Length: 162
Image (cartoon, rainbow, N blue to C red; front, side, top):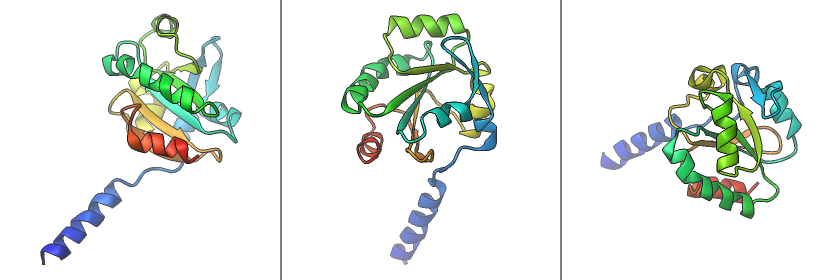
């Protein structure tokens, strides 16, 4: 009986942990701002990296865990030269966002999320913590839906196997 109960609990746990494979339309249609000040949809951003693995780092300058994790992200960048590192900022202002990029010397592709936590993108991925890391495979599908640490073993494994 214990084995049966354990098996049932195990399968329920797995089913609740199932991750999304594709972004929802509201996420794809959300509009961000490039470092140069141009508006661009998330769909257009992803399309520009089709055929490449993309690590998405959702962060903010005010987020202590985000800043503490940046050296780990830089290590990932050194080990994964073929991966595109896409940084999405939830900062309150574009000025704060740009200052943080310069201050912490964050290399990669940068976009500002004007509506922050309340954006359709953040709502559609059930964002509840930053930093949040996601991996998109070369086909544009989500390979890793959620990691909250840059040194997460699953995150490293997904990047290694892309």
